[in-house]
Length: 383
Image (cartoon, rainbow, N blue to C red; front, side, top):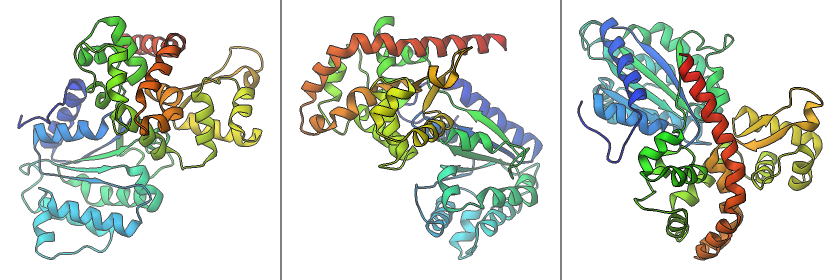
C-alpha cells in the first residue's frame, strides 16, 4: 500500500474487490471493465480515489461535468491524460494530438502496449466518472467505448472504471441490447448501513439511529458528526452556516438528478413533505395527473422515490410513495423549506422547528430504514 486519503474510513470490502480485480488484470495481462454505480454522494469517486492512492497504478481519472459540450469534455479528457501517470502522457506532452475519442482511446492502448508485453507491463487504470453526464452530450460514447475495448483496450492490462450516479442508466449498461453488454461488470456501492454509520459517529445506538435518520448512509455527512454530539447540538452547529454539508448536499443531489422547475422537482417536494398517496401528491404538487404518473415513474427509475404496492386490490389507488434515501427525506422535510431562514443566519429557528417535529418524523423515517436493513441482512446471510 502506498498511502491513504485523509479522513477516509471504512469500505474495506469494496477496496478488497477492486484490489482483487487489479490483481486479475496483472496476472492475465488483459483488460477488465467495471461499471460502478450508487446514489449520488454515496462516496463512489472517493472510493476509487482511495483505491488509486493505496495501489498507485499508472492511472488517469477523468470526471465529466453536467451539460458540458462534447468538445469541451473531450478537451478535458486529453488534459487529464496529459497530467496522468499513464504512458500516453509522454506522447501527448510531445505534441501528439488525437482528434477523436476513438483515436484517444487507441493511443492509450498502443502507448501502454509499447511499454512491455502484456505479461510484464504494469496494470494501468483508466477512470471515467459521471458517464451518464458524458453520454448526454456524447450519445455515441458507449459505442465508442465498445469499439475501443474490442479492438485495443481489452488486449492491454487495464482496469477500466466507469462511474455513474444515474442508477437506471448504469444498470442498463449491462443490458443485452447495449454496446457494453458482456464487457462490463456491475459494481454497486451502497450507502453505509446503520451499523457502519455507528462506527463513524461513535455514539450510543439510539443516537446513532437518530443520526442515520438525518444523514442516511453518506460518509461525507457522517464525518461531520462529532464525539458527544446530540441531535440538537449537531443541528445547532451545522445549521448555523448555509454552506455546511448538511445544508448543501441535498441541493447538489437534487440539482444533479433533476432540472430546475421540472415536474419531478415539484413531485419530490410534495413527497418530501410527507404526502404518500397519489391523490394527495397530486394536490400538493399542482401538476396534472398524467404528468404526475410520468414523474413518479421517472423518480422510481432513478431510485429517488420508492413505490410500495399492496398484495391485492387497486395498486394504483393504494400505492404509497416515499423518498428512498433517509438524508434526502430529512432534507426535503426540514432543510429545503427553511433555506431562506438558514441563509439569513436564523438556523436557530430551524432547529426549533425540527425538534418540534422530530418525534413524529423519526417514527415514520425509521420504518423504511428497518425494512431495508432487514432485507440487506437476509440477502447477505443467503450468500
